Amino acid sequence: DIDILIIDQMGKNICGIGIDPNIIGRLRIQGEKEPTTPKIKRIIISDLTDESNGNAIGIGLADFITKSLYKKIDYKSTYENVLTTSFIERAKIPIIMDNEKLSFTQAIRSLGDIDINKLRIIRIRNTLSLNEIYVSRSIYTEIKKSNKIIKITENIDMFKSNGELNKF
Image (cartoon, one colour):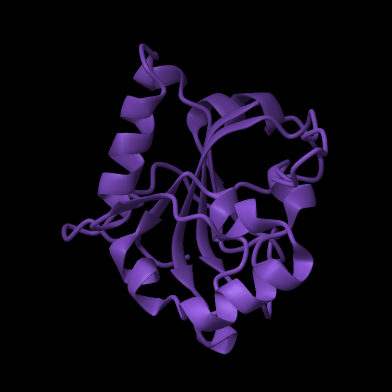
């Protein structure tokens, strides 16, 4: 169970539909049952890769995006791609926020009455690059005993003063 998943970038060069539905646990295909795992309440996507040339198929799998990502969307290529698949939910535009930090705070707000100290947050570069991730303390407490996990650093501020994400 994850409260918020932050994805730094999506794109056609990462996955054919921008973000891998197996990683995020969302299909958004009419008539198809959604996967039961992973269970992610809110997904934020920060950016679209340059290699995608504006094709933002898969954007509808997110709940929040940044204004900078929104401005990169080439609707003609996105719509052509999504209409070819017939899975139109995947091209619907999520809530747009000015920057990553605002997306994050509004995602928290949308969860309702929740203990901030128990938030379950994961941040990934993209759904293809999962070898280095950020996790909140509540998730780290669960996974720290795994011999597959190596803690690199602790207590990192995810955001710059301007509200953008710090780089991985």
